Length: 108
Image 1 (cartoon, rainbow, N blue to C red):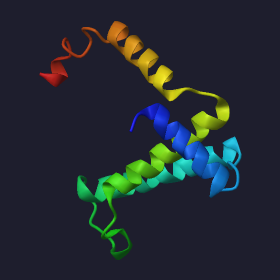
Image 2 (cartoon, rainbow, N blue to C red):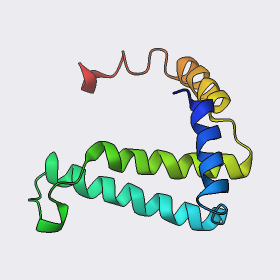
Image 3 (tube, one colour):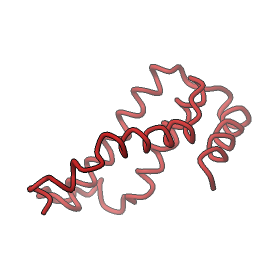
């Protein structure tokens, strides 16, 4: 699935199953909540916190997909083509960070 295809599929789902998009501010809040859920699992799986009963069985990929879903919703409703945005972001990073990480002593 391409990013463009994902944007189309999410839009179709929203219009047929989801009725309509939530407001942009509501989606921003939902995105923050979803990132928090991912952070919770990461802290327990890779950090020092132990799992609680309510966290057991949580799928890291599913949590990431929830974030991607909401991000795609936000892109759709604000007119952002995520393929173009990501391509521009790669260009920016390639120019700005061409030697930055190679020269970072902390990464060697």
